[in-house]
Amino acid sequence: MTSDELYMRRCLQLAANGLGRVRPNPLVGCVIVKDGRIISEGFHQEYGYNHAERNALLKGGDYCGATLYVNLEPCSHYGKTPPCADLIIEKGIRRVVCCNDDPNPLVAGNGFRKLEAAGIKVVRHVLEEEGRELNRRFFTFMEQKRPYVILKWAESADGFMAPATSGTYWLSTQEQNRLNHRWRTEEAAILVGSETYLQDSPTLTPRHYLGPAPQPVVLDRRNRLTTVPSHWLHLQCQTIPEVLHELYEAKLQSVIVEGGRKILDAFITSGLYDEVRILRSPQTLGNGLKAPEIPPIAPNRLIIVEP
Image (cartoon, rainbow, N blue to C red; front, side, top):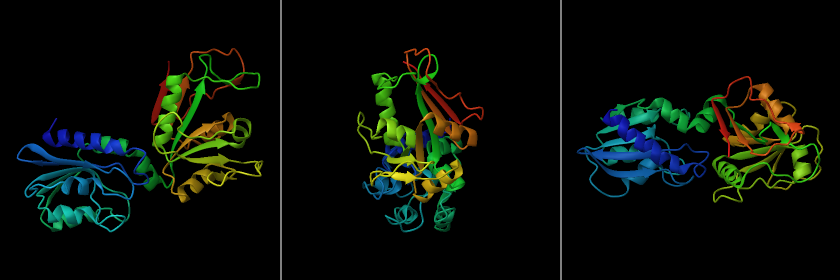
């Protein structure tokens, strides 16, 4: 492993601390190295506040001649905060090492050009695939014009989502339920169908894990719902591409699809999903509503959590 790769791995580690708190911005970390040692670090902590580079560069110290590592191209435009590229130039950074180019049209190479025009050496694409994996939600949203889609369900040890008899039931263990609520804090939206909405009256909040709540969404393809709370997004689309377009227009970068079975099947049939997460219970049901088959179109990521 080269020293550039070593410091970039630290960048990615720092960047991951912002998961769920910086959306719709990407996850970004920054490490500043001078004379062979790290002299400052930072990461983007919350949407609307300082970017990673600014957090690292404003801690004080002599950065003249240092190398700055950042996992995404520094911004070159005014948004919620001033351009990071300008501050990098101002502080006398000699070299910038980056993981990924920024696909945002407001940046898209302009940050690198500004740095190079100021005489700063730019090294690109260090640990590029690892960077794309970390920011898979951001890249999917920017490049495919849709949210990153996670299909999630709980199933019994013998492959059922629900028992044959009606009533309240729990398949997930306490540990699995807490993990599920942590997952909710990490994504922008969570979606259920009208049947789940009517039968379960879900809140879709991360009650068992501290963190931001996702935007609750109900897909009402048969126009069954007459009243939906104002903070919910009520979609009356008929096909999955329309749903994803509406979520994209709402600037929701990622979505967990929690069901029910018909909605999950519709996403699986469409092929428009990126991850599948299955919480597998130790219980057996014997009969009932079958869980979806693991999709024939392999997702980028398949996570099966067993007790």
